[in-house]
View 1 (cartoon, one colour):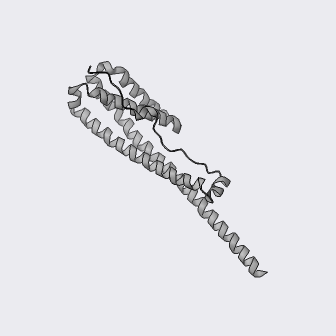
View 2 (spheres, rainbow, N blue to C red):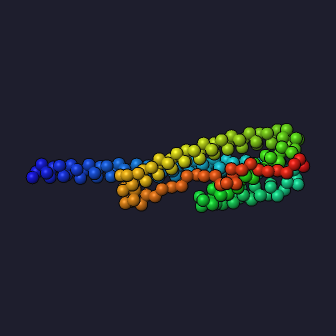
View 3 (tube, one colour):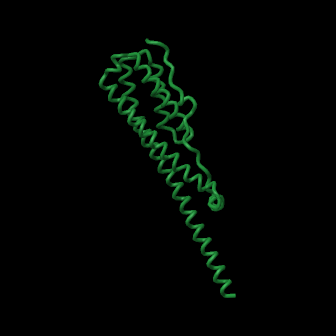
Length: 186
């Protein structure tokens, strides 16, 4: 009987240790998602900080494109005030589209395209956009790793028992996937 009790205690202990490792891995992955999301937010903040300078530079050359410039300024303000992640993602996608419109507008103004401030801002925004894309890839990879634990057996048992739920990946809206259409030369 003592061998049976020893085996039973060993088995229960092994299950408890496994549960502890799975739980800790789920917590670690969930915190990794929060960290990756904060990384995306930091890169977006860099972009938001560049927008006023870009708008001011373009305004001097393309005053009659006022609606596009006002829209991107308004979207920037909405993004800075947004705390809700799905809403923030929608606003971010709208900013993506607006910035594409601004750069498409610049194609119609040779003097603007040659302006040193505009070129520096465009280069800075391109760099920030690359960093945003990298941060989004990191976020999606972290979400995938976490979701695999939450959804695969046997770790899904621990995830379900402790309320761990799958997260959504970052996805672009259909509008953000399209190139802006600017009518003819102005």
